[in-house]
Length: 244
Ligand SMILES: [Zn+2]
Image (cartoon, rainbow, N blue to C red; front, side, top):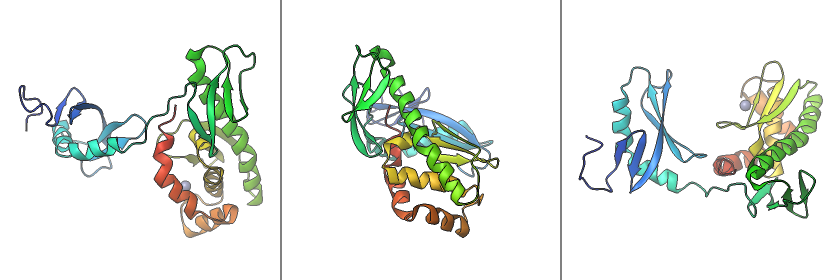
C-alpha cells in the first residue's frame, strides 16, 4: 500500500510527514515505542485530538503506517466524537466543581483572579488570561483537596506527606510510597463527588498499595458510593481534557 500516490482519490486515507489525511482532514500522528506492547496499537489523545501509534520494539514504523491506514475510519470516528474544545477566554463557561462558571475578563480591575456571582473574573492583559485561569484553578484545587486528603488520611491512621496539583494526561491522581499525593487540576471541572472519590482513592493507597478488595473497601469506607464517580470518569473524563 502506498500512502501518498499523487493524483489518487483526494478523500482516500493517506499518510505523510506524521499526518494522517482522512476524509479530507489532517490528523497529527505521534509515535510511541513500548517494550511491553505485543502488537501495533492505536489510541486517540483526547486533549490534542491526535492519534498515537504504539509500536512494539523492533517493529518497523512502516507496519504502524499500514495499520494506521487500515484503521483510518476508526480514527476519524473517534476524533469526531470528541467533545468540543473549550479554550479559556472571555465568555467561556466552565463547570467548576459541577457549577457553570463564566470567565469574565476585567482588564481594569486591580485584583488578580477571583470568583464572584458565578463568574471567574480575571484582571490584566487578555494574552495572560488563559494561563491565569489555569493557575487559579490549580490553586483552588489545592485548597479544596489538601484539607480533605489530610482528614481522610487521619481517619485511616495514616499521614499524607505532601499534596500537589498539576497537569496529568493519563490519570487523575497518584500516590507515592513515601506518602506524596498528586492530583490533576482538571478535576476542579468535575462534580465535587467525583473529586472526593479521587481523593479517597489516592488516600486509600496510603493503606493499600494495590487495587485489591481491601483497597476498594477502604475507598468505600471513605466516600460511600464508588460506582457512580467511577462511571462518571469513564464517561466524561475525556471531556475534562478539552478545557483550556
Ligand atoms: Zn489506584
